[in-house]
Length: 144
Image (cartoon, rainbow, N blue to C red; front, side, top):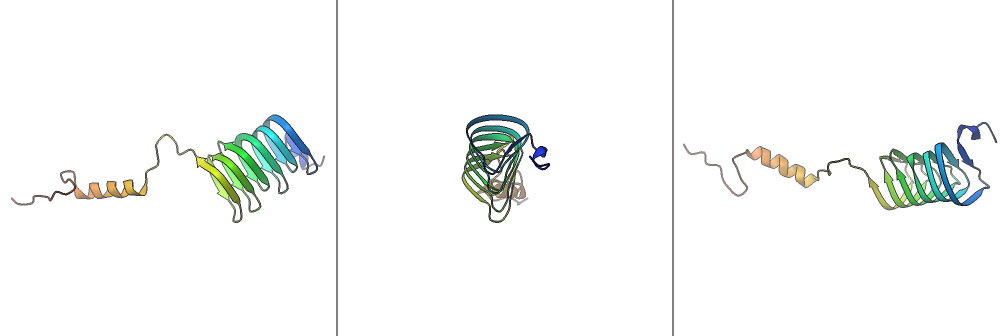
């Protein structure tokens, strides 16, 4: 193990293949090999040759390799140019580099209020510009 490897609570080397895993890691995990299974981790790093398949959950992730099936994060997902993610992807915030690939059901948490669409914004602006006493299709009566 090199000094670089000791920065992680869990490390899977490039020549390692771990299948049927159910891991819960309170810290950082770096995957340069392959893991198939369930992984719960605070921060996940998938190296350029790394592959993680299964149900992955955590706070944040940096992906340079491949992630498949389910990735659920409460915080930031960073996908580097060589990163590939396929499956159901949920994140708090996202940063992708040119060349990154994401395929599947991709979503984020908008918070407690539904997002305002462009049409709703335009309608609201038009309604307030027309004034409170004007309804659509009616003309204002300015005769006095």
